[in-house]
Amino acid sequence: MTTDSHKPIYLDHHATTPIDPRVLTAMLPYFTEHFGNPTSTTHQYGWAAEAAVTGARETIAAAIGASPEEIVFTSGATEANNLALKGIAEAYFAKGQHIITLQTEHNAVLDPCVYLESLGFTVTYLPVKLDGLLDLDRLKDAIRPDTILVSIMAANNEIGVIQPLAEIGKICRERSILFHTDAAQAIGKIPLDVNLLNIDLMSITAHKVYGPKGIGALYVRRRNPRVKISPQLHGGGHERGMRSGTLYPPQIVGFAKAVEIALADIDPNTSKLIELRERLWSQLSPIEGIYLNGHPTQRLAGNLNISVAGVDGNALLLGLRPTVALSSGAACSSAKIAPSHVLQAIGRSESLAYAALRFGIGHTNTVGEIDRVAQATIETIQSLRKLALRS
Ligand SMILES: *Cc1c(COP(=O)(O)O)cnc(C)c1O
Image (spheres, rainbow, N blue to C red):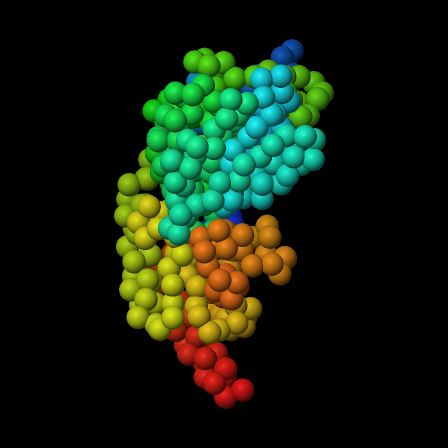
């Protein structure tokens, strides 16, 4: 990867990642040469596209221990989450109308839950512990006879905390309650086997793992138990009726390639990212009034989220802007001026929730970049504190 000295260092890999050049190469023929519609079964243009989609579906299914017919392609994790929550709520309406989720979920889970509440469903938003992890006893206590679904994310997009999926899956399975997980940040970064973890539905996306934007999938379990979902897009009956709309072969091929590459290198990537993250934290942690947000080790390797006391969050981001591209929290909500709901859920005061930095390290980042970012962060905090003293 070339470095452009005029561009800030990219440390916003939880918002999105660049496409791996190998992914792009795999995608290109499906825009031009093999442009067919994969559901055109009467000619070889369609067959070529269909073969590519079939291969990609097998790769993605194998990556999560699923079978190919359990993969429903969507436009991303937002759509997959909507399909899971609304699709289950509609299909299991007669069984019950109670759903359990977490206060620290992405808006793509929280907002469909709020919508379902407006239709008469009841949603329990479980709190998390100060380290961002779910308290399993609280989950057990929240389950009611009319609970149809537990939706708990795999890894948090702000503080990187990885929830105890195996334990959650076990609790749900023992009580015959469906378990959905939003694994947008987790796919390709931590091992995810839907059978080992007792996951019934799982949302994934390509663009957080060096694949293209605009493509994702919902895993829907077909046996033990066979999960039913009501479609949210009606039309040509694609994806076994669960999601109509012409499939997008270049994106699907790119998605599979990205997942394949990520899993092949998962161990070296994880150790490299942990090394970079610890290098950054060891330089920042001596600063007075700096707090690590989220569990110190039970988190994504590339995630460091900190709060800084006594500085204005916006001024901090502004000061860092020439050096480093990062955000204070979720990209999709950074237009809002409200403090992060995730940081508030882990007990941060409003001012600490405002003054947060989310460093999302990716595997193209270097030791030199991390040191420059650490230096710039230290200097910006020092100068903002000096200014605050003077005024
Ligand atoms: C990015 C993200 C989403 C949304 O995924 P898209 O594919 O961009 O729609 C959902 N959940 C989490 C946890 C995310 O990080």
